[in-house]
Image (tube, rainbow, N blue to C red; front, top):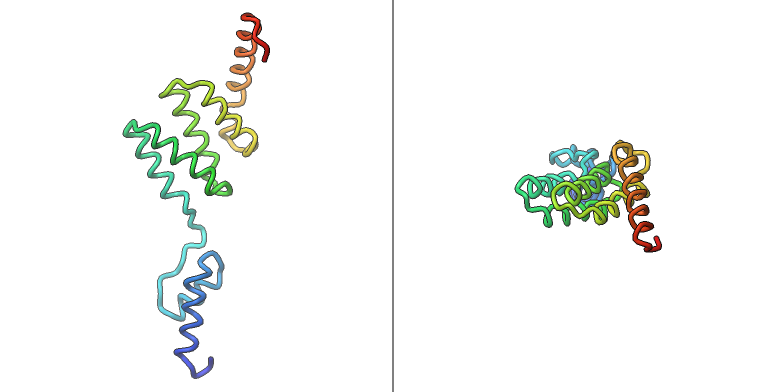
Length: 143
């Protein structure tokens, strides 16, 4: 591609359009005078903000759906455990759906055991499960 700017630019454009998660994209951006790509960008960030907005507006079911979609669609995002925690928190504190909240908390514990969110809820979940088992035993219902 030396002395063939059109061919070089078309190759750089292919790199720029198709390799936005690779370091080489910014070399192509420099050659094309295009904006540099933030390689640390997390696509879940904007979705999390949307879910948080619904939560603040008390549109809880929509907020929960979006938070859970972050976990499903971006499980490796640093926001995935936070999104699970937020959805369980809404279920527990706003909708009082304790069994549903416990289920989401269990997923959080299973999938992201070393996160600070698990540290916040592990004792609460353990106590909840013990109390639920106690109540079932009192009423003669097997676990």
